[in-house]
Length: 305
Length: 256
Image: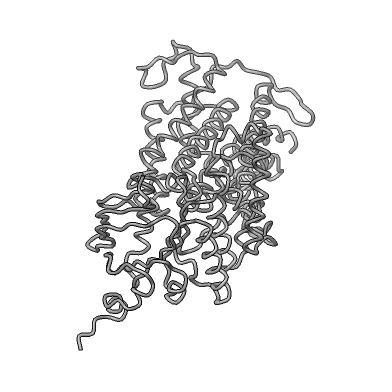
């Protein structure tokens, strides 16, 4: 079972980063964003486009040549692209919906539609083939009590650093406080001199950048697929709910727990030969925990966003 | 510079076929306590929403200290020193009372994100000052023992006090009070009235929407009466008390 701990940590950090992003957006805007998975996939697809060698012609109906940029640079650019995409979604879609007082359920349905629409655009233009980043294969090594490739260890460390940074930002900066304020009451924030439209725009951008980063992680550890975000979305929701909806700190821990549970459960004796059912154990445990703690592990009482 | 604090001209707002506000001209002087009264649906809150930027007028102009604010956002108007409260009390539920005050206190004058990331000595001193000031106001309003309670744990009356504290922490020029006495017990209503009068005498211009006519008559220097969105009377409490239009609007026309 423990040999799966390394994989569990990796899946955990992907879900954790993505859950924080989802939770942040929900916390400030009350939008349950089903298109979150597509932003995750965008992070991976954009990285693939930026970094693949220029003679590589699977992407984009063979019409566009990839850019062949340095890999790290490609990842950063991809995360920025995701941020811009999220900002654009807010400006052209969600802000007008908000100003028109469209209800939460209607907005939820819009995000589901958006998710399906974008996902199939990927299928059309980025092909349905499973693809990999242009990285050489690495051998797993043992670190402390888990093993993983040096590259994946880097992913884990970057993930943890990003989470710490986000935690500090939300707790101590005026931006973080303003996000908490807008979450509690948009109207009251504005009479306190806060431009809530700006705060919501920044929230969309940062949430989408985090989602993009989760996509880069996911594709670095595994591979790039048109529906990769959708496949992992349920686990992200599970992580968010487990940690306590709307609390970023809860989402971090909840995401990590779900990721570890999913992978570690592969090692359970009765799971032998049934690894495709690995989500079942984790989601089952989530349901049991929620029965005893309906507000999630860090729900409500948590002070930091 | 005009000596008028707030000035509206040909202000119109309708919802569907309903004319909610239709005011030809209305001026408010500085350093006055003016109440806006009228029957339910008279357009009082809509009028507040229009002048505080929460709704945009269909037509007409609004000037605050001579500046056109007809198309300004609520946060811009707040930064200009006109702070409003809400009919249904709003507080930051998930912040403590002290955090509520410090947040509202800091954001208007000092909302730079870089400043909070680069935590300078100046910034720290500023926060200490703000904290002292928050405590000062909480003592005045008798809520300092609640400083570390979450705002969601407060009673309705305490929330009203917190809202008032929040709205004065930035030394506003103007307060828009939307039914400050609604839903509070008589004792607290009395206290709130005293506080409002104290604020008015300290030089803050106050516009107040209130249903408690007795209280309005007692503390207002001027009363503006709206009915069905239009201005039907404007004068001192005594003039309003005997105004035929006002009596009709409240009691209905006597077709006798």
